[in-house]
Length: 264
Image 1 (cartoon, rainbow, N blue to C red):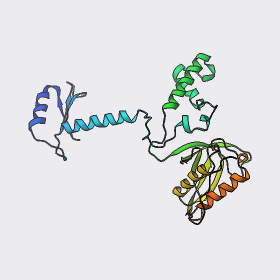
Image 2: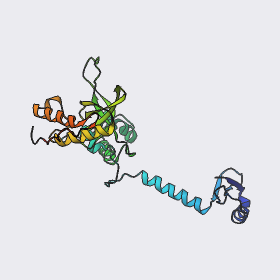
Image 3: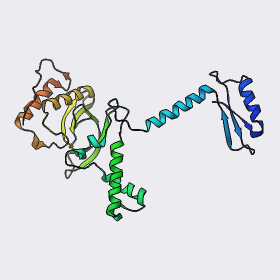
Image 4: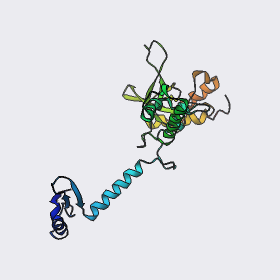
């Protein structure tokens, strides 16, 4: 957008030229005029083409709207800590701990452990408010942070660390890409509790379809807290049957659709 500047004493001339001289941008709009102060430094006013003004207003409204969380069902499947965090399961608090230190410094200017109980309660309240409003990954990619158990063979002790994974249609089951495939990446299904459940799918779509089927066939398993002890012989057989149909290479029509297990 080309802009022409005028000193304050020539404001009338600036308006007259804007309306009558016919100077146009490449898109046919009138060129904008800046009105400067007496020292020709600070911009006091801007004369804009109406279409330019409408665009700026629309962009401003769109930006403001994008900053407000929306609770309607049309939102993408982004990560919402109060729903999808492993800490959001029954009888567990929201994950407010990571916010305690920065909020304590921002609100009171001192470490969290030096706050009074009343101040700590206020920090917790603000942290919960933040978590209830925040939604990560609104671009529909579905990437969420989960605590993963280390799968490195040379790791001297079991430990957990944060990794990004993709949400699936089954709560608590996520997808991760690996570079271990013979022809490139392979997709694996991991649980919210950090277990690597299965690996080997050639595409994210096939892996996601398998995860949805696993959730349907094993509906009683809480994937956010599941351990290896949660799998009985019956559930292991059902899991194997599900993977035979929802195979690494795609849906196999020659395999029967597994029936959901009603109990463990």
